[in-house]
Image 1: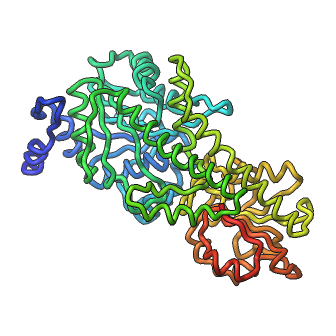
Image 2 (image 1 turned 45 degrees about the vertical axis):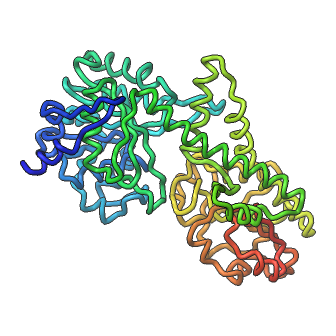
Image 3 (image 1 turned 90 degrees about the vertical axis):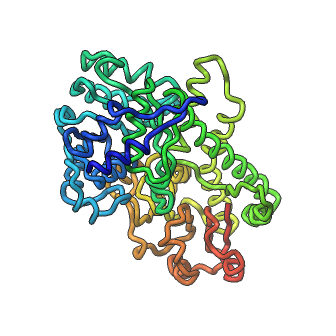
Length: 468
């Protein structure tokens, strides 16, 4: 352990401007105590972000408290079941994380990471209730000398203007004297087994140099790719919302092209394939853009910009395009059914996929929900199949029942909305077997939203196929 701490002391340094600062023994004190289990680390919010974090720190031998207000989720973790599918049941069963829904257990920790979701309201304004409630619970149990790091996506200024005052009020401690605060935006990509927590550079910030040093030293223990310190908390908050806004805008451009190319009878994916042969092509493709990050973060940024008197010219328009794609796909399905001689209200529409992205169980803010809603407006109740989605959550969130794929039959129209591996492996024969028996191939409507099927093979089959 002594050698380890000596190596850690030598390793953890950072640059601010042109002046190199080295972490002193005082700065390293918290890391030493965490590694020797004299102090504990807590993760508040055990979802797709919090759970990998808690597991990573526990794997380094730290005493980790995993807190979530969802008691059912805690029971699953305690039973060795991973509802996020990010870590896996075996790893959850073996971990030493202390799972709890009792906020009083947070008093036992000195380093706290807040990783709760930050959704948006129906009017696209930030819904800060989760981070406010988490701050209140933590504040009630915050002890002197603690360090608090927020990972939840928020607009620039939120940590200092909203979260810190709550911590001070609930704890009766003064920030900077009784506790320190920092911000390190989450960058985890749910379902991505290549770009995992430890392989993604971590942005870190602190309220002052000491806080930054302590926060960076702790994260450096689990982030193999290293940490990237920025000068202040607001900058770190901005990094998160801007990187996702940039991606959102690029996809919006491709979605707008897809709408135009559809009218021109040009295959968008073929255009993109050709474009990507150039060295500086970005590789974005059209699609349904939902989820808890890209479909939400731009609104956090534009919300704060509006408060400062600036109306977004690009970001909001890009979000409008992406928010419209579910309706666009649903309308295309209706058009194709009519062209195939079907009566849409009497047709059986099957949607393959409900989650917001492939190979991930997260259904939050899935734009497939917009397809469902729009079809219902025309009297169509689609059949949903998704091996990744939780049936109870699907019923609660979208009012749909999940049908096992093997039980899908008598379809008139199939919308392949999510590119799960299970759908990528389907043969045309297997897809054909899901349709109504008496239909001719030219009467079978197939929408390949993600472009996962071989276009030439589908065309040869005679199916009435369309892809975004």
